[in-house]
Image (tube, rainbow, N blue to C red; front, side):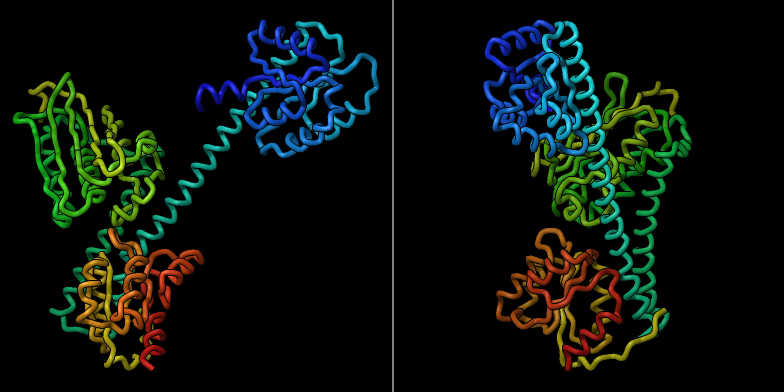
Length: 512
């Protein structure tokens, strides 16, 4: 909160009986070091209340104002955390119906009889402000809980989505193996694909377990005197498939000599591999990634820099927090739970180091810098098959950036008799469209670049795709997701992993 906003929330709004009383009350509060704001009318006070207040000081006479109803309504509509203190200065000995009604309609009212000693008045106001400060603390706590709950909800949704992705080609491959019963040589290709997808799921679960162990303080480090140069080369090898797959150019700017540190070489390789993977995922194909390392001022400084999508300024302070993922980043990342940076920070800090993020803003790339204490150089040491529809005369198009998922689904459709084309991006699908002229198109939604929604809209605008049966295949299955695919022009919405028993009736009805 800004300093100006904080001042508004701690001021005392005053509506006195007379102008003279207002001047006197204002002077007393100011001398006591309290910020006061005198209001000429109750209407003005209600308007100022909307901007913020720590307490109200009202003369009994002000409660008879026509605007008293608006004040009561404003106080009754406070958020759950707020119970604004109201101090009413009442005439001595008067049994005022107005004061009684105020106490009945507004919960937090304190009545002070006039005349009142200055010390007692100031003491009452200070007590009211202390109570208000506790309310502000409660507000911040509730806001933090709501944000944490929102982040956990988003994280769980992402987790479900990322676990469904590898399940889709797995389920399709199992169905293919059951239906086709291929020869052992032919089946090896399916088994290899299934192993890759299982490995991907294992990595997701391993990341979750690592976070859980770190959070509970159960992680054990095998620390030793190591050369960080070797660790960095190990990390590059771990990340090489992802970097090469995206056709990135990796530039190594490593120191010529040894970089002795004390740490767990396996965990540190995991840290730098996570950072390299992060750079590869959040950088468009053909990007530039730099891994630099040098010894300076008693530290080893390692930087992973890219020219990718960058980080918004408001996200820099929270990018390492649990369950935080920048808006739109999950699509650009093409998979992952968004906990890699949390894991990296935890592992670095456990080994006496630190990590921070830098970015000039969205579209400006990002850099992550790890600092570790430098050591002395000498220290280095089965479901039942459904009836097969008659689809021999139909052509199909499968579009998915996950090649295993696209290829296995295309082979499944070919086994059903469809002449099937495969595309791994929206742009590639549009290139195939004139020659293939598909009767059926099954489109992944969460593709980088041109997603499934945009591809569907473009297909519907072209002569070759106007009458195509469009099926959305996605990890998202809420009602709003189904409404979104329908609005984009899809005829059906299927959830990953694809259930062949859900697809076969669609094909059967379409072929008839």
